[in-house]
Length: 125
Image (cartoon, rainbow, N blue to C red; front, side, top):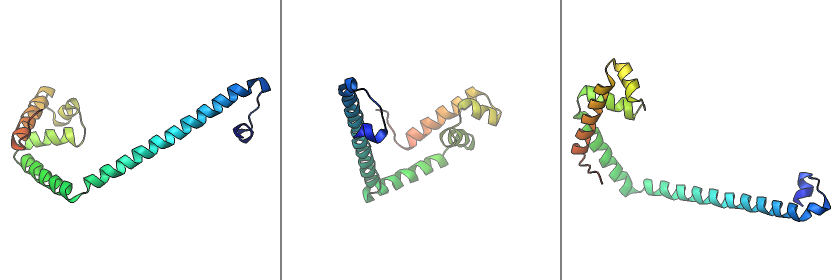
């Protein structure tokens, strides 16, 4: 049926090979559909967990603590941190924009991360 639908030409001696090829392609196609459905179902369940009242409350608490911690940083540290984390700029790009050395950017980021870890009680595991 697939051979006729696709308008393929084949020789009678190649029928067995053609059947294997068509069966293989159908199996791969079905496998991909199942995997895509699994990923979609999983993403929906993760989104539901994210919007649960408990998660929303935890997220709000974390957000407030994060904003408070950012408020405790110096203006220079906050600027470098936000450029790196929010604008996704590299240390070199930040240094060029602020007309400072890359080493200064590194130092400000190091101090900023230390302050944030301390303020947010983050322990490396």
